[in-house]
Every structure is written in structure tokens, then in C-alpha cells.
Image 1 (tube, one colour):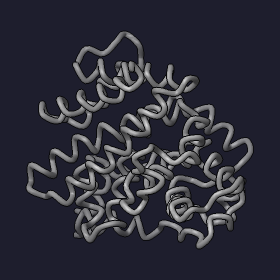
Image 2 (cartoon, rainbow, N blue to C red; image 1 turned 180 degrees about the vertical axis):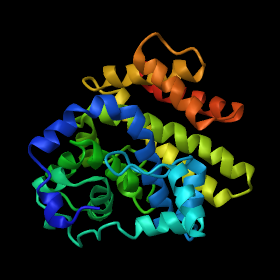
Image 3 (cartoon, rainbow, N blue to C red; image 1 turned 90 degrees about the vertical axis):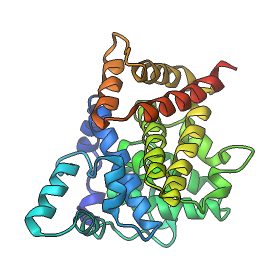
Image 4 (cartoon, rainbow, N blue to C red; image 1 turned 120 degrees about the vertical axis):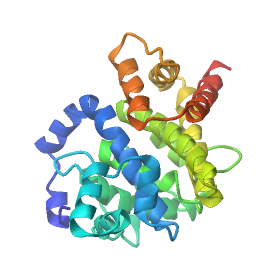
Length: 299
């Protein structure tokens, strides 16, 4: 992974080029990044190996020049005589250390961070927000994080999975205003499909864990799915952001019935479900939670 100086120099034309490519990459790399983020988070928050979490999601890797698929992880493990979890754990060891204070990073630092840097930084920022940190400086950094694809995925690694974030993620009155505001202003071409994946994937995974009798893992996946649903409900019901999010939800829902629409996005969602080989019970659960997300916007 890139060193700190290299990461800081990654803004400018390269960042703009990456932004222009986002739409074409969203389904091919979005699922991989959703999976690896949740895998890393699961490993941080439990004694289980990253390999175990990766098996559940069906993929471990990040999209880009150094893309690593679950097949490649298995191949490397076999060649080295190491377990899948060992290989994945060695990758997580390269995660940069988060700053003790999220304000140590400038807004430009946050904008320039790659996925692993963003995933690390999100822990520091979310913990500060959970502890009551407030003010324009935090809002600016959160908005900067949600302003690019790697930052959004890195944010979701922590926000959707950390059980300690009860105030900003699980409050009965809804998502914390500072987070809600940043989500509404984020790039919906990235956030909408990623949020749907972060609802569908842990919903299906929770059932797989439960079938194996692993109730603790099932509960972790269910927490991720609940928070993913809240994010979608917030966006789908928003006056400005709602229309494109509802359209993505409708396409994902149609594809879950194996009757995707004629549009390219509908076909991509069909391929998304096919790729992960979800069973009938899992697809039924996914249809149900997508209906829940759509139901809020219809009220």
C-alpha cells in the first residue's frame, strides 16, 4: 500500500480521472470493496480470522491496480502452505495506523486517501463523533470522506459494523444529523449501489451463519444489515437524493425476482446475485429487506 507521502500526492489529475471512471466500476469493484471492508471490520472486532469473514462474503480484495480476489487469496494460501485466514491477516497488517485525533488529517488528506487509508481513518473519525465531537472541522472531513469512492467504502467499514457506535448509528430517533447530512450530500453514483450491497450481502450472510449455528457471527451480520437499511431509508426518503436512490432500489428489487429491467443497471444487479450464488432463502430475505427500503419512500 502507498506510503503517507505518496498518498498525499494522489490528488489532482489522477483523482479526477478516477472520479470519471467511477460509474463504470461501481458494480465490478463495489461488491469487492464492500466485502473486504466488512471482512476487515469483522476481524478487528472479533477473535475470528479475516479468512472466516471473507468466506462468508465470498470475496476478499480491493478494486484497482492491486485487485485481489478470493480466488487469488486461496491460490496464494495453497502455494505458501498457509491458511486462507493467514494470507488475509497478512494483508490487514498493512492497514495504516489511524490518527489519534481525526483533525490531524487535513481535508485534503481525507480526500486523497485510498481505500485502506480511508478504512483506517474512519475508525478515528467515527469514534470522535460517537464521543460527541462536533463542529465544522469534523463535518468537513466526513463530507470529504464521502465525496469519493474509496472514502465512502472506508467509512462504511466502520460505520456499518462497529457495535460501539450506538449514538451515531443506532439511536431511535435516527442516524446522527452530522452523518445524515454528509450522506445526503455524497456522490449517489457511489453511495446508492454500495448501500444496497451493504444491505443485501450481510442479510444473506446472516442466514449462512445461522445455518451453521454461529449466532454471534449472524448477529454481527444482522447489525450491518440493519444499519445499511437505515442508510437506504434515509436516502430514499430524501426530497433531493431520493429519486436516484429509489431507482437503484427498484432495479435491484426487480433483479432479485430474476426479472431485471432492460437497463444496464438491472442486468448488473442480476449478475450481482448470480455471482454470489445466493440460495432461495437468502434471495427471499434480500427481497424482503429491499421492500423495506422501498416502503419508506412510498409512505
